[in-house]
Image (cartoon, rainbow, N blue to C red; front, side):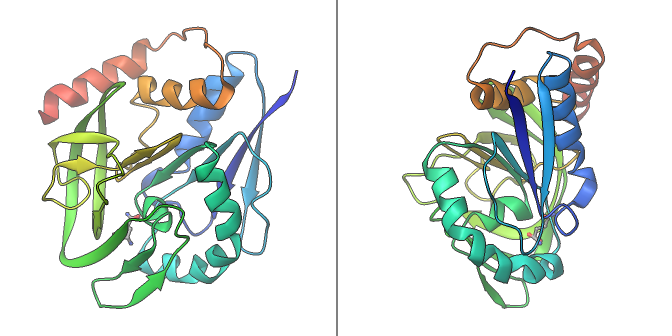
Length: 231
Ligand code: GLN
């Protein structure tokens, strides 16, 4: 059996609100189905290399600045991965890194990967709170904390529509971006353990195969309890 490779980009710098738990969730949901899974940490100075699924977590402005120079060195690989339809999950700051630039609330502009042609501008007021949004594969619940307002061009679709929370910018009710197999969201948490349908959508695309159902009794109870509480 081929080994399923998860690449975890900038695990030390981009890992807010337990976002690294998404990697463990993906690992668990694959291993339970009999996959041989390897997680490779991709750090500053490493090549992105080959993978079946790429994960990037959230980060504060300071950490984003630390990795931004290295990100430019990886941008060709990242752009190719996005445009060739590799499965990617990017959370908050990790989401912002896929865009052209991030202007922090203090006005500092960080040139980013340019893998997707959107931009983010930091605002004085942070967007913080529980968030619930509708996606083509079910409702997703999470937690958001960002100053960045992300604006998508008309040819890019949001991942979901906000039911509760701010979403990309607190204005257009869009949340995240879904482009080919690149999934980006502002939802921390980690977001995947309590949204099993979202997790399995990523895995279906990354493995290109139908997946046997798992016993998600607890995950579903948690998901439904939170949806009920926040909507
Ligand atoms: N530093 C970015 C912002 O404030 C991302 C924050 C995050 O990843 N939670 O918008």
